[in-house]
Image (cartoon, rainbow, N blue to C red; front, side, top):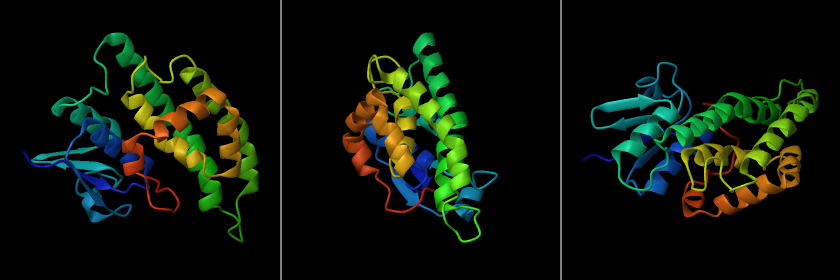
Length: 213
């Protein structure tokens, strides 16, 4: 069987999530590092976003769809539960992170540092100050969620955790984000423990700003 090819960049949190799935399941895969909106992305994703997957005659876009396919098509530990209760909880946390936390942390807060709309290119302090209450509120929600078991769903690692970890990595690279994470005792311990996983170390992006998918 051909190797799955993931097309994207590890500087994209969503690409890294898919690579984490492969690493955790022991899938022999190829990562084709590609800039945003490259022709290889448009060949699969209608808007040129990353990541995309090519596996034999199958092509897929959207990280959750790719992860679902990889989890079911390959052996290794199951990362997406099939029982109704944990499956629903996983969908809840994946949706929360992708629709709320990503928008706050990456597309608003971090981009106020790396792509500010200020005249001199300095960090957009007004945007940073405005978004911090929402950022801290979301960190508090996640802190409470992992307090009991050190996981978002049940007592084992799932795709919900893998989907969150790259975002927490980016959060910790900025002053206010690092402060918010350090102040969330349970979430900070959760991140430190999972960031020590071999899969997380093997998928560490090169230094530089995140890539918006």
